[in-house]
Image 1 (cartoon, rainbow, N blue to C red):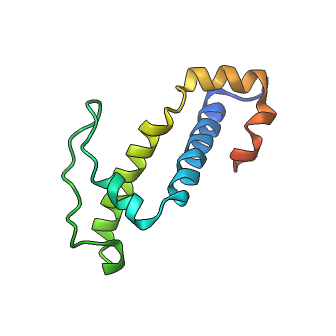
Image 2: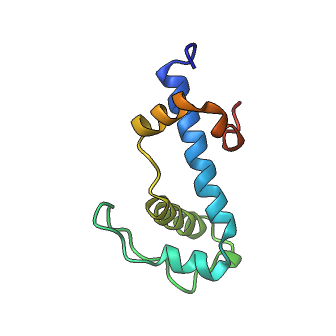
Length: 106
């Protein structure tokens, strides 16, 4: 880790975090994804209108699908309670090998 800059570590952290969210996202059924996308926004997030029920992803509108995925992704990120960069960086310094399976840039 000695030769990694904070920028390098930040990129690894983002990669690792995205992998955690993607794993959870891929576990969801369409129904679960829909439910997550329509949960009320948490107090720490900007209020985003719910995705209308008649705009299912199968109907092919890219904008609505992106809204659906964005809402579900934000919900999953809150659910997983991912560590801050500072906390992650300390854990990575202690045992970088533990993070290797979930970092695609290595």
